[in-house]
Image (cartoon, rainbow, N blue to C red; front, top):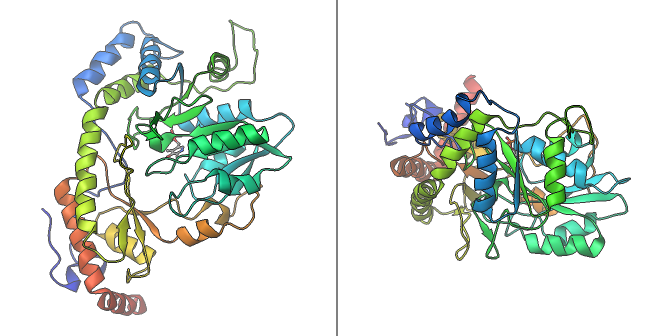
Length: 404
Ligand SMILES: *Cc1c(COP(=O)(O)O)cnc(C)c1O
């Protein structure tokens, strides 16, 4: 039951009943057809081939390579290890810095550190929220080992521009394409760019394998090196030919990922409905703008990101507190920006003005499989209500905080 808010005390943060009994998150939590999951699972279970590049994993790699239009796909236990292993292999020897944006996935710096390298943060573009050749160029120096293009959650980064910059300055480029798994970038399928692109199959992503990740590439050499490195670096029984990890995808995760891949088109259609619901309602609310998906590109419509401007009467964090109390688990978008965190490892950066401007203005809204169009209507009703009564909401909260 969705309870509309008639007066201030109906707001959950002010003591009212929350809108949702079961919280609505930003994660996809795709639930593919169970029978399909079991059918894929039976391909390995009867043979007791539970892991180590079994039949389901090989089928998944083939299906994902086709899905992206790439020559090779190499799966991993997670995107974290897929990306770290690839960074370690591609980084120019004798150099230590990997350029990544600061306004990005929260564990991105740890991935670089796991690869034995040092994060160098670049700024992002104000319109795309992504790094561009122009924001990366000032970060390139004699110690630059690798440039990592990270696609933002809505639309793509300028992959072509980054690839051109990389060849101009003689530094390899790879991509974290996790959030753009379904997209095209300038008409070209993400995953079909030449070098290496990393993807996740974590339960919150578009393709749900419980956990998992993969790299697509057109390079047979890179594919071979990565498949060695995900499995200890063994070539034969006992011959170790590269420094490897144990980062293999197991067969049950591969089965789930295949069932989820079979459902991906239907999933995108459902996401489109959610996106359109947010789009229509956000157009009526002053001070909040939906980050719109690019027309003319293929997009998954998965992530709903809202940007506040100066007309929005509440702070970003209070807006999120109000929503979270209702069971609408909105989150600050990629916040705090990575360069503002204290870390136990070294990071390098210069001034990042656009990141600092954006980092307190973006909200990641509930989306994905657990959120219905009716839920979105109710969430938007709350936002419209608190924007009309912003002064009173703030005054009530001040009293509440004083009492506490
Ligand atoms: C989720 C995510 C990852 C990490 O994926 P895991 O499979 O959970 O390790 C990396 N990059 C981006 C952009 C992500 O959203």
